[in-house]
Length: 347
Image (cartoon, rainbow, N blue to C red; front, side, top):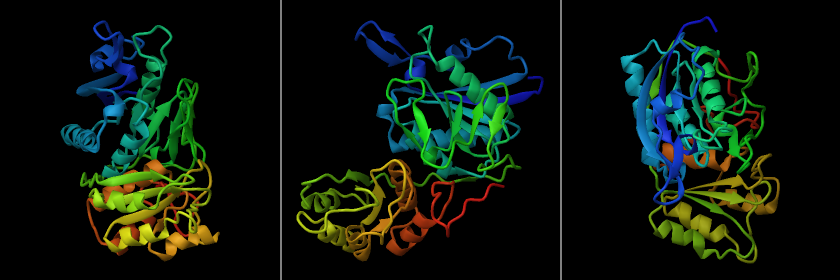
């Protein structure tokens, strides 16, 4: 790599930053950016790294306000150093998809990569995947013709809003849920056409967020009053993971009345699918049509994580249900891939 590059690494904790805490005999995030950089090959003099330590927390402890702080940090560094080639965010794997999806919505049109990465094994362990993943993320941030937020992990580049963590222990922790990943890393960085390419930065930063969104997984025998209870607790949005193509019970233990009451109370209700692949289709079956008829919004093939984050982001802007529906159907950062009437065009 003979090209010159300047990037920023923002550390937030996670397994990649963890070492054993003798007091508790457990792993605890403790390593800062400087410690992580020391694990990398020495022959990287062509890459200038701005180091920024933001958090040292396990990603299970990440909250929506942390997404805002990460986005704010990106904006601050970008404004001070607009010449940067890209960003690397080190993060725990458990909630990386949520954080990266939120950043992709809060920081749009930056025109350069924001690469989230982490590890399954702590960097302090000799066989850790951390050094390889952070080196791959640095390569992407420095040199890839990519102009969007991504997850770089185990030699693959994923779009966060189309990604799930699917394995607990394997190095191959993440998979893209249709279409394919954005690219792969080998001797060269191989990028696929379904991506946003680098552009001259004309970013929009908007961190408004309403964290009062509930994610509910439907199960056989679930009591209908669960929905009304969620509204009574003060939630402004509800993502319901239905069966199959977004199906919900409509006879015994029907959820339809509860959804209608929630919508009438001003709570935005969206329907996703528990299936990793495919889409919630609101008119395929009677049990999916029933929720749509009382005002629930189908999110088609959006992942539940992406739908959850997107609804919180939208509710930070409006509480009007018609506007929420219109914005949920708008494809901002490639979060929808199956709807024929909604396109995501790489520029």
